[in-house]
Length: 402
Image 1 (cartoon, rainbow, N blue to C red):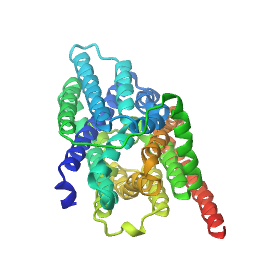
Image 2 (cartoon, rainbow, N blue to C red):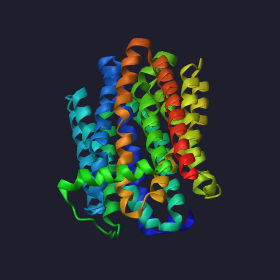
Image 3 (spheres, one colour):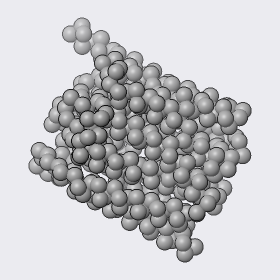
Image 4 (cartoon, rainbow, N blue to C red):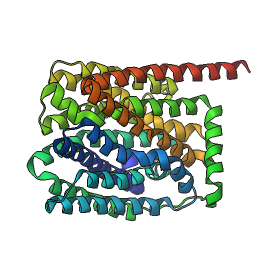
């Protein structure tokens, strides 16, 4: 890790990601609490979050193909400029008393388009800056930092909402996005590019999908990514409603609920980044970590006390550390070099299935209450993980016999 952080371009890309991700979680929590207080509807909160996540499903695979043809540094710079503009626009609306829920959805939609390129653009650049032998440690450190931002961001968001207000929170976010822009501007980046053939984009994506279908580890990575985003991470869409219904939580306590899982993820990510267990981690660890997190969601949903829910979710963070590190590193190490950005684009598309889960958990929360909705979704996710593991195990067995 010392060597990685001594590499200037890696350090700049790592820091830019940490800053931008922190503000992303601040925005998500502040927008969620504002929406719930304005509407009283868990479904409305889920729909606002769905607007932020939808572009990943619709554009994720295309960003992977485009990132192999266009300058990734310029794409990253354009994205940071766009999210800064959106944050300042929301701040201005809030400061003048004209902010409405649909404004937050629109801002989230712009941020979602930018976020759709996170894996295939910035994380690909992170891996390239680190060098081939350090890819696993580099991605693990980057995802550990992302876990830290999911810890700090919601805490800051909950604190900001109750103290300085929506306008100041989004204004600070815009300023931090500009700082990330400045860091990326200083990065020296070169890449081999494929010709940009708009008519061939679908064929390029289909080729990456064929590679994944023939490779059990890549196929398992895509399947587990769908399971986690539809049935596990979607619970954040009703987190304000869950906190209020289960524990009568304040905005800051809702921030604590959102930050609990990243505490465990931070500890687990640091262990992975140390490289001590690198040789033991594969698709099995990916499935196991994801299952652990879903089990803790079920336990937290039935918890009788806020402190117990926080402790259980922190344990679940050990599972998300495995998931977050391996989701990217397995794609980078198992896919052919010429298809890695496209494979990361497919992962982004799988992440983009999250809006399906957000809508489902929102509808279930309206009908059954937020705690029951979270528990039911996590149980379905565990079933899907079992199906994915069984299917890919059969593929490995057939390959061994062949």
